[in-house]
Length: 340
View (cartoon, rainbow, N blue to C red):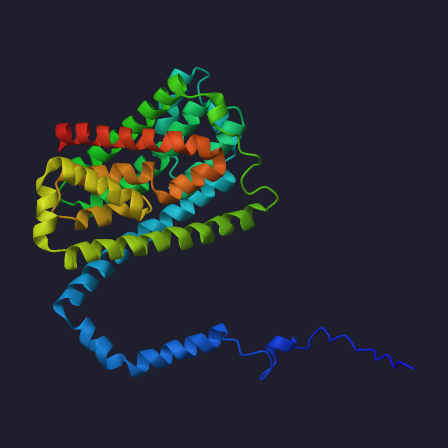
């Protein structure tokens, strides 16, 4: 006669079999990893101090800290304002304020970026909301490009980063506005409706205003702050590690310098409230090349391409990204030749 045994189910608070000590192996949880890292840092403090004491590392840390400390207040202030814009200003306001004719709506939407500041992280969802509310896509895209490029926080940060070059502020405003308007008009002429996928729902739908505001602030601070740190590290590395002769060779060729800083702006993906301080540290390059860095960054970079793909679809992003990049380089070179 067979004997049937009934196993009792584990209680909800009981650890799983693989988590019990001595059974199924051991897991490294985050507190243990932190302790191990601190232990390694303590044991290796001698070599670490020696490495930090070298002239190269001291120069690297000086540039890195200077860029971060200068840019961080503008970054935080810009994130707060962009979150307020995205959450508390209804998209219907823009639809009522813009002219009905697309040719006039594009420059009005572009100028709205100077009045209503917002970083790249906020401009994409706001542009999506505008399209969903019936605003012509050309005007929404003009706002998308102008808001992070010519808003008051960005221009103030640029003036502080380039204290002896007031023309840089004027050039950045003029180039950013021209890129937004020209790209919007060109998209209105050549763009097709099926290239742009309408966003499915409003941003922050289903959340309270306060929760949406602080959620947007936390998201943008973490993401934009991370890109700022990466950008500051890259700028410090260029200043401290890359041989001066290499930078001088690239900076000495007008075409190479412009293309190099345009590519750097796309790769670093720095928030527009902070990119002026990184550009100011690249003293080997001409003002026109650094203007290109400042104009390209708010128009297209890696994070913007990802956000545009998620909001408007891959077909749109694959066409809009090269168009806006080419327009940004062309306009920045022309404006730099005239004003700088």
